[in-house]
Image 1 (cartoon, rainbow, N blue to C red):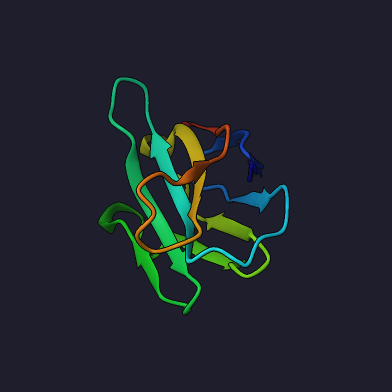
Image 2 (cartoon, rainbow, N blue to C red):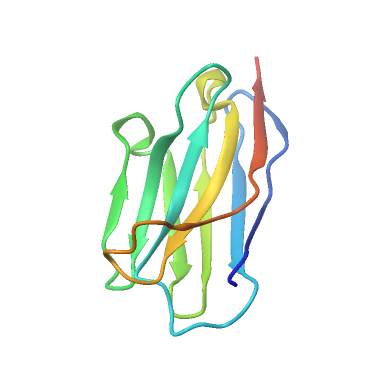
Length: 118
């Protein structure tokens, strides 16, 4: 059973930067897609950014220009670099991954808390 271990969340001031990391606990043949969701208090979980094994990236409109995703899908690692943090970025950030493009159930990290103070 693959487990994702995400980390890096902490309390940061507005305008600050942060790097979140995620790594798979055991080797596989690689992940077709890895990425990050976030869930703010009282809100639904939303997709933030993804990275495919082909190198294609996706970003939610609200984070374009501030968030950068990077990683090595073959080895099961992904990171999220966050700049110019805003209070609305406060959320629990979850790493996720799918081995195959059409997998219905992705693997999830346990979540890491990012809190932005003004």
